[in-house]
Image 1 (tube, rainbow, N blue to C red):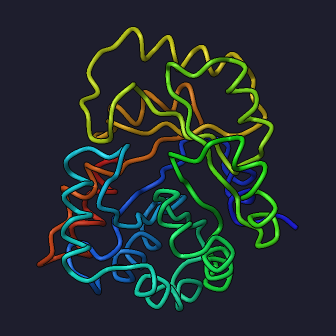
Image 2 (image 1 turned 180 degrees about the vertical axis):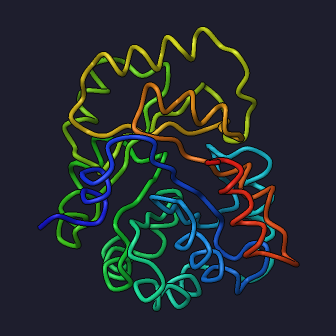
Length: 257
């Protein structure tokens, strides 16, 4: 059966946009308002961040949004409660992004079962070790039809990239530079070489580039070398609690004029 993520990449070959937001930010009950606005915007894939107190890959903006969401009272039980209406709001692919501790603490099978019940398509867990994934997590993820997206960076070996490609995780998350989220883009010969190098490997899994993309120019640049871009920190900065829907649609229109 073709799932939602496979359908997106089959229907549209290039220039896909993924937007990340933190659940429970800026206000606890904003999750579904943001989902609805993204569904009505020119967005292809949605990532919902699980707030976590020790986020290894996240920069200051997403860290701050997580702290605010936790202070607002967001937790996994609340998130799944909010997502009960997810598939009445959007038919776009939706991934949950967070860390392995979130999943382990909740209970891996219980977590995956809840994801399947509300219609989540997959998970992005930056600290997921490949060995443990194959041994412990993959059988459960497969049981609940959940994709697992692995990250690669400019430092990732060719052997590891090929191993990630074999996992068929929906897409490969290409971290644009060896940094946390929200860094600057700028001109970087090293980044360009990295994008070209991975493009030349002719991987079978689609590739989305994230970290540091904050404007149309950066998104346009990554679209030349990958299947699309992922934006998180810049989107969170643009959220206006007093006009949430307007600020979301205005941001997407500016990013994809």
